[in-house]
Image 1 (cartoon, rainbow over the protein chains, first blue to last red):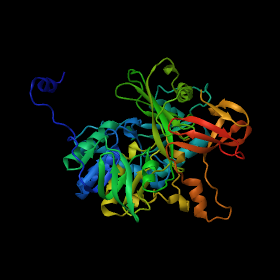
Image 2: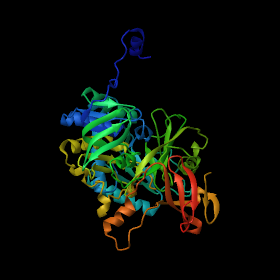
Image 3: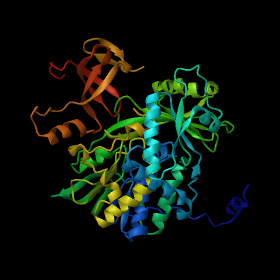
Image 4: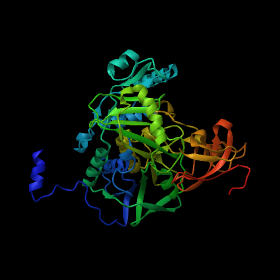
Length: 412
Length: 85
């Protein structure tokens, strides 16, 4: 047992609270951030650190990082298919590299390598396309054949006696995982230290809109006037934006995942198969973290289904037949903001002081640092940074999609 | 297993159906492009009870379902030419 625990047990002093206790809401803030998940807290941190804006309130209806921040499967990668996407996620990985040091909070960033398996010639062609776009933009990404796949991950079933034999893969050696709760808590703690107020159990119930500005935010704990409003509530984006009269290119669809009982370490890499609609990695606790594509139809509730498990395991057992007798321990779902082009929605809306961080479908956690940093820049300068331009909320009105379907974790 | 009641085929497994989007006014064929973009890409997507297009895939039959998208309960289904219940 670490001796520090003994010291706390015997001493009178209790460890300091990591987040200061909530106070009364002030009558007004320069910036109100709706949503206390990773994204909102990261934006709060960078607003304070990079731009010196600390008269900021983060309003969270539940508890910190309790929504999709707690429900994602913690994978970080940048091997996307569009130059806009690759550039954006690459910056996020660069921030992740030093995040533990930056926040002085261990986010357990662990590079383990990422293999996107190809089972058809068409999939190999898409992988080659992704590899070329990635390398052009300086992201480590390479096509590997079946022999090399078997060498990198010897426990994978390379047999030809399955419905979809593995032909090769896109190898992304810098693919990583990070502790999702720690990311939210690290940002929260350092933002709070700089004076940002974090209000949990404070639900936003409406916006007071005058002309093209939001003048105040209505909450379950009263009304607060605001300079700027940033909403970072993936899963509830349409509902919150709807309160401001803004319609989004989003459908809310559940995304499910599950973990097995802990096993001895057998799997180093993150394994993804788009054709088989499944992915798996083994956590530091030994649990296999597994997931698939989003549900077949929209729903605004995080419920789990048997259909998901059956469909997922049918494919998973082709890749790892010996997992057949391993019991599942937990199963859950999150509500994913699905956009038509599988890219996020960021920047300004049609209102003058309403900023949006939404459309995070199945790719939100990995973007936490860059999105926080760039959305903070967007709010502070009131100008949309170049790197976010392609993701504007009205891009579909001019058919300027950023088509990432070919690089989404497991397609649709 | 979740069951949906198809107005043409009766109760069937939900896996036989495909979601087709919210019921909303369709722009005129010669409406400006942004109106069509709005119709295709932008959705109310609000929690609560919603009317939606659904397709019974094996018979290619389109109909309307009234569904509570917060509880995943299918409240009613009806033929598009019928008045809503």
